[in-house]
Image (cartoon, rainbow, N blue to C red; front, side, top):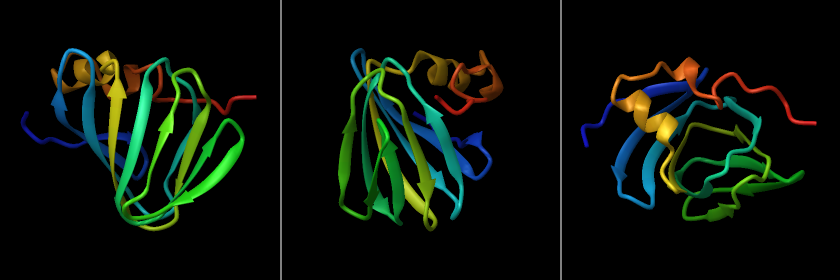
Length: 122
């Protein structure tokens, strides 16, 4: 796949690395201080930090992750991220995120994703 960057949120960009029938992988670059608001999606997600530091909040519990650390997020579980410094992460989803793949194909704008303009979960 060609590596192009798409803004997901202010200061958060993604680029799809590979996609199969059962999973997809993308890199995510987060500026220091950027936030991915609390949200949930049906896809399982594994996040691996290549460089930088993040606060992950999953199901109300916060954990700091740095280079070489990974965590798994079950489908349907609320999660949020705050970048403590510039951070590069590899995210793997199963099944593939069809909303993001549609953006990659130019079929949808980032703003059209149900996960783009997220409201905090209660």
